[in-house]
Amino acid sequence: MRLIMNRVFIIFSTFAALVGLVFLGWILFTLFSKGLQGLSLDVFTKDLIEGGLRNVIVGQIMMSGIATLIGIPVGILAGIYLQEYGGNSRSTEFLRDLSDVMMSAPSIVVGTFVYAIIVVPTGHTSGWAGVLALFILMVPIIVRTTDDMLNLVPIELREAGIAIGASKYHVTMNIVVRYAKAGILTGILLAFARVVGETAPLIYTSGSSEFWSTDLTGTFPSLTVSIYNLATMPDDQMVQLGWTGAFLLTAMVLIINLLGRYASNKKRSN
Amino acid sequence: MELFFRKIAQLSASLVFVILAATTVVLYLSAKPAIEEFGAKFLFESRWGVEEKVELSPAELSELESVEVDKDTSITDDFIEDEDDFIMDDEDFITDDDMESDDNKTRVVYGALVPIVGTVFSTLIAMLFSVPIAMGIAVFLAEIAPSAVAKPVGIAIELLASIPSIIYGMWGLFYFGPFIAGLFGGNTVSLLVAGLVLGIMVIPFMAALSRDAITTVPDMLKESAYAMGATKLEVIKDVVFPYARSGIIGSIILSFGRALGETMAVAFVIGGVYQFAGKVTDPTNSIPVVLANSFAESSGLSLSVLFYLALILFVLSFVVIASAKLYFLRKK
Image 1 (cartoon, rainbow over the protein chains, first blue to last red):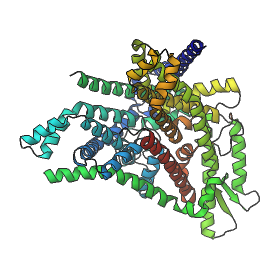
Image 2 (cartoon, rainbow over the protein chains, first blue to last red):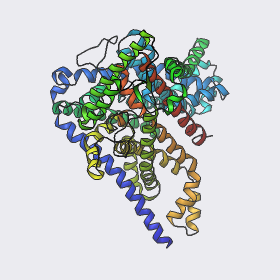
Image 3 (cartoon, one colour):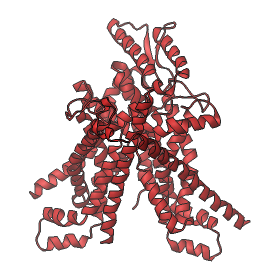
Image 4 (spheres, helix red, strand yellow):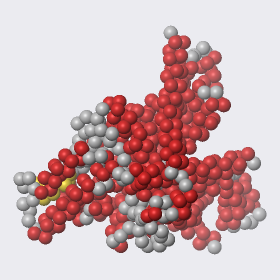
């Protein structure tokens, strides 16, 4: 009886794993087959208004990229503070917990917040509002990974630095951060991959546009918002373009994730 | 330099707190008119954008009409264009009218009950569906599969967890919705489809976290049990699960929090109509979807109401996530 139960359990668990994988495989399969169908050079050379995706892809990468550029120094400095200066005081623990919680906060709420502080006063959607929303989403991620990575740096390295008379700033920047560089880089890549696929916080902060634009003070083209709009249109060609966009977005996110994985693996094997 | 660096690092660290505090304050201030207008009754009121104390007002009529129309029209235009636009315009008109004339005979009533119930039920369906499957995957990866299988599948699961949620929503609309409608009847956009798509979305996330919790169980404990003649089931049931319990519960609650605040995966497939789902195969609404679809067209009181909703969602998910992180997933 025990052996039969055991058998049943193993079969059930394997079956559950299979069911889950089948669904996930199904999603990837449709994504590939539908996405590749519409893939052509036009997608990259024409703007949305002419049936391509050039402006929205560039717009999405620009917004996420700028958010990352601002987010990197802020996030890393905050992580450094938590690990190197904060010690284990109550306030440090509190900030750590807060960033943990913020990491999983619903992104749509961040969108409403940015809407209230930027879009309402200025009266229109803008690229900067989108950048701010993505920035708010990514900072906690960078803070937590930096904090974790610095935590892995052996205390002896810090002591050695202090022993030769280096100031705390030098020890932190030239020894500790350098040691943890690969891990921090991975954190940044993962944070970028996370925000580049965000839709909800952009819908009414950056909006989306069908035209080429590099002016962040106006409504800004966004790939994810465009996918949402295209997919809900009755025109088959538009839906097809949406699938192509979805495919490109997923490919981008997966490639960045693999890069991040590669960076951290290389570090570990050294 | 030293001091400057320290200060600037400290500033960055407090920014996290500032953002969180600012979000709460701004949401509260923006929601204030609605909170004063409706108070806590908002939570239990099921009407949305309906004028009160007038026999069949234009808003009510159009609400009824658009709901009727909604059942027939294709999925594509029901949540973005027609319905919301139509209703919001009417609401705006009435709200402005209301304020100008200072006439208290009529007022527009908003209630959050439909989206709240929709959110809770879609999340519950998602959990019922995803917990057994994710646990199966986690146990399979950690205990059953040979490592030649477990490693690539594990990486695949982690990668799948990073796929943007809009992809799940789109797939749900075009493939999964019709599939479910074919199986159970009803609409291709419904509470059931939304819950299942949400469930599929959180499976990789939950499975990866639970597997991590399971692999922390020391081999020695398992080996002792095996040495006493326990079967795999007994080892997992009596040794692995009790040991990894808090990690597993934490991963479930975290996934619950994620499903609760998820917008895009649900926006495509829930239907976006302000009515309760009498059957699970009926369309309804959820808080994030209301926010995503109605923000751009709202102003005045109708906008404030949306901020009220956002505040509710924020507090709700904050509590859920904080309890998972601080109570169950605490490492030290």
